[in-house]
Every structure is written in C-alpha cells, then in structure tokens.
Length: 249
Image (cartoon, rainbow, N blue to C red; front, side):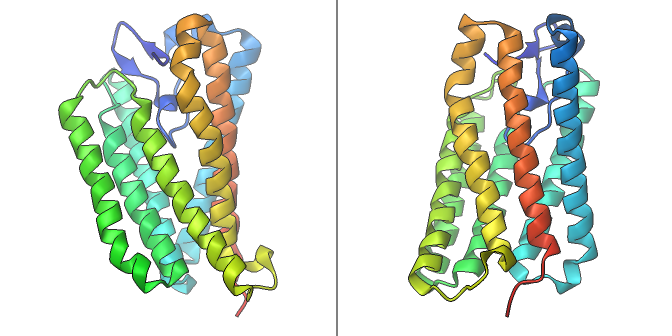
C-alpha cells in the first residue's frame, strides 16, 4: 500500500506516474524535519522544471515540428492533471481514479510524437492499434478494479514497457541510418533520454514500493518517492532542452 491519509482515503499524488508529491498532515507527522525539507525541495524543483518546459513549449510552439507540438500537448495534459489532483487532494477526495485516464492520454500522445520521429509506414499503421489497445486496457482496469484509494502498479509497469519500446525503436532508427552528426542538436534524442531514465527508474519503484511500505517504515517509502521526484526533474529537464534547441537540418 502506498502512502495516503487513511482517514480520508485520499492517496498521495506522488503515487502516480508524473505527479509531484503532495504531503498530508499524517505524512508530515511521520517524517523527520530533514526528510520533509528534502522531499519538499525535490517536489518544488520538479514543479519548476515542468513549468519551465511548458513556458518554452508555448513560446516556441509555432516553430516546432509536429512531433514536438504533441509533446507540448503532453505537458499541458500533465499540468491539467496536476491541478485536478491538487484540487481533489485539497477537498479530501480520492484522486487515483484520474491515473488510468492520464496514462492513456500520455501514451497516446507519446505514440504520436514517435510516429512523427520514426517516419515509418509500418509503425504508422500499427500505432492506432497499439495506443488504442492500451487506452482500452486503462478503461478496462478502471471498470474492473475501480478502487479509488488503492494504487495498482500494473498499469504503470505496462505503460513503462510500452514507452521503452517506443524509445528502442527510435534508437534503432538512429543506429541504422547514422545520419545525425550531433546528437545534442537532436530534440528526440533528449526526449528519449529523459524517458529512458524516468521509466527505467520508475519500474523499480513500482515493483517494490508496496512491499517496502508493508515491511518497512512509511518514511523509507517516501524517501523512495523522493527519488521518483528526481527522475521527474531529469525528464522535464530533457523535455525543456528538446523544446529549446533548434534541430540540425
């Protein structure tokens, strides 16, 4: 079980894929002062990185290729989801029912981003079926297991595997074509790097967080979610670089 306010049945927003931690009073009481400031500092940095990426994306939207415009839409989805989670948390309402919808939208948009990057007719034909199947799985998971105050890592594991598959296809294309001379000037390289770091790290968290909370302290579990916050900072920073640089011709 992940950290949540048992009196309100509202799970902490840090249990979701891209959500920055929101600390309840019960969580705060269980944490030492040092852990609290570290966790809050990481959460603040993640919000700053997300906000900076959104600002750059909006400013350069007209000059971005279509694939990166879908990335800006993804950042908009993340901001909207953050706000919805925060509002529900403030009203002491369950917020985990948002997670499947966010995951579905996130993967759908990432599939569009990589569709433009791969420029593969085969992938373009497969993409609607792949993304549509995952969206159907998210809806099925919501209907079959609608517990709003229980975090289920299986959905995140499936999404992470699918996202890493998209990244693998992109790097396979890079290695087979060898036409990019400067990877630091290739936006999709930065997007892919951020996704690799984030999802490889998140897989470890999704696999073991429930076990750690059940057998160890809540504070240790929150320390691990602080690591998740660091992964978000890396991801948003890579998004920021991808939207900022001008790709080589």
